[in-house]
Length: 62
Image (cartoon, rainbow, N blue to C red; front, side, top):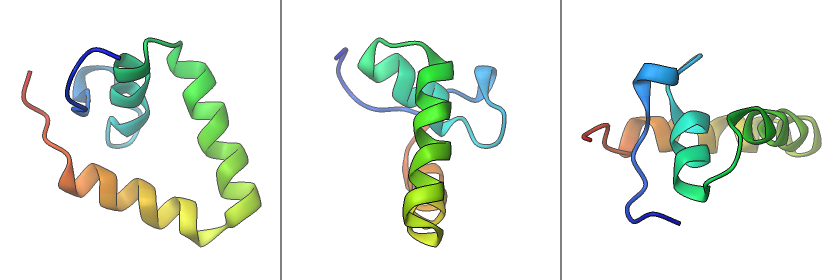
């Protein structure tokens, strides 16, 4: 992990949360996006709510 979590709007598809999480964890962004899809299928609205809250609360400063 490389420090603080920040969203990455330059590689964003929606809000940049998955791209920021991939940067923070040092993994491929596709793996994170697939993980979010699986989490959404398993938990339903909870994963969507966490995604929106993370995008809203996280900073996008680099």
